[in-house]
Amino acid sequence: MSRVEVPVTGRLATGVQRVTASALGPYQSAVIRIGFSATWLLFLLREYPHRQELYGPDGPWSWGMAQQLIADNDAFTALMWSDGRVWFEFVYAAAVLASLLLMLGWRTRTMSVFFMIGVLSLQNRSVFLGDGGDNVIHLMSIYLVLTRCGQVWSLDARRAARAREGLFTEDRAGPVLWWVVGLALSVTTFMGDLSGGWAAFFWGLWGVQGVWWYLNRRDPFGQPRLLGDVVANLVHNAALLMIMVEACLIYATAGWYKIQGSRWQDGTAVYYPLHLDYFSPWPALGDLLTAYGPIVLLVTYGTVVVQVAFPFTVFNRRVKNVLLALMMVEHSVIAVVLGLPFFSLAMIAADAVFLPTSFLKRIGGRAARARGRVLARTRRAAVPGQRPADGVEPLAAQPPTART
Amino acid sequence: MVAALALAIVAVGACFHLAMVFLHVAPANTVSKQHGALVDDWVYPEFEQNWKLFAPNPLQQNIAVQARAELRTPDGELRQTRWYDLSAQDGAAIDGNLLPSHTQQNELRRAWDVYVGTHDAQDRPTGLRGTLSEQYLRRILVLRLARLDVGGGKDVMERVQVRSRSTTIEPPKWSDEKVNQKPLYRQVAWWTVTSHDAPLDSGTRVRVLAPTAGGAR
Image 1 (tube, rainbow over the protein chains, first blue to last red):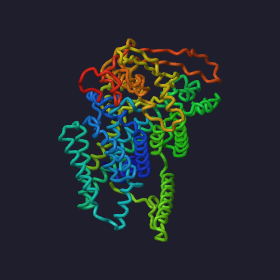
Image 2: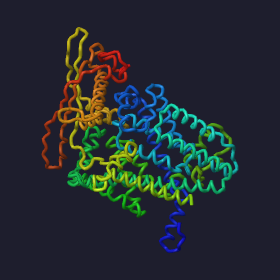
Image 3: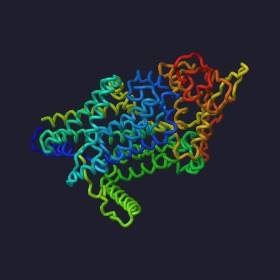
Image 4: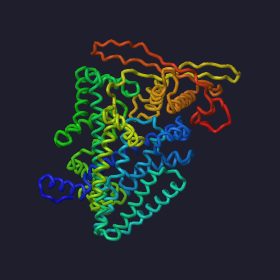
């Protein structure tokens, strides 16, 4: 890199300094981690009674049919490794567990990989079942693997903070998890279940984890360890940028294609989805919302304006926040009125990547206080007259950051 | 030095990925027509996406998928059932439901979409997806009809038939638009049902064609 001190290169240098020195948006990456994993977790729990019909080996889209399609499109799914019922139940349960642990931020980097494996395995197994919500989670689960999304609001962050306070105990779970994952990876590689590309990807991630652990142990302030930190920051920042651009692409595509539609032009578009039998859980509510033409026009035009404008407003904090609030409200309404709760949750999670840090910190502080109160109450109830709750640490008041 | 190299690789990689995704979601254009194969290779299967949500125009008709069956009674006679409106059942299941399941909202609806999209006007499949989507739809019909117990527990399902009934949505009351609300039907020829077409526990309601390992248990 050149070190010529002219303003432009100066700014460039500052930019390079920023994207290498830190993993930006710790709160934003944490909130999307929690948002996407919670959405997928709730979806899996909701569909638990229907899991066999949706993804099971003997469902309408049978294992053999999926195999024919996947032989054609090379999509990744662990469900193709066996047509057994037990394997299916195991993968479904593992997907639930990975979502839960990623939400809590336990071994975030490893869990994000398992989360992605769960999402891809189920969705690619039955491709004709998904909707926009599934599509968002599919993409974001891949991007999340590349982010340091457990820096705050995670069990990892809590462990790192305790280590800094000197309450450090030898970390046994980490190495054990690493060896177990390595063993599982060896077995799947040996069985020939993984394609070359995926094998390289998973072994690469596993190797990086091992090297990172070794570098931290050998010399936490050594040159190789710092270099590793720089690379991890770079990858995180690039992935976070991709998540943001992806969200903008979603809105831009949705908006620009709408502009070309005659119904979005004549201001009646919003009326129609509300009168589709498949998207009207509350027909009376749909009628009520569309009773007045000018209101429908306003919402129709408003939707297009917000979707088209959003990508351009990310550079203006105030306008962006207003549009963000509008979009979150619209998605909340869509969740109920069009009967698309998981799509809406996924979109709200994607929107959240644009929330300002100060707002997220405030929410985090509030959540931590609420958690403290609940814990205090349960402790008092469980052990009357014992230690009061001042020992409860606020999870977000003084944010510990984890370097994982 | 290594850091600079990493920076270059990550920056180039991110820009390349974003360019590919952009060309994938953008309308066909000069660049994407020229580099279509490269874009497809990069984007499929894991980065495939479609955000034409209710666009360019929202769907303006209710498409109901209906099915009937031909059954063999224990006496060896054939009998035909009435048409069952499976989409109406989905609609009823979604009504008042805060958490509609994919089995109610997506399964049959998308299966019919895919079937229509992968067949020509004479119902001939176009490629692998066509053949698979036909079998998929047939298996959904058998499952749904078996759940409705159309055979009464003793008759055997030998054939099924599917049709769609499209009705244009009535224009808003405040609009002076007039539409023809006469339903439009698209009917597919009868399909023979075998044990390969019986998902989950519907296998007892269909004829076992051959003792091969298929969809039935």
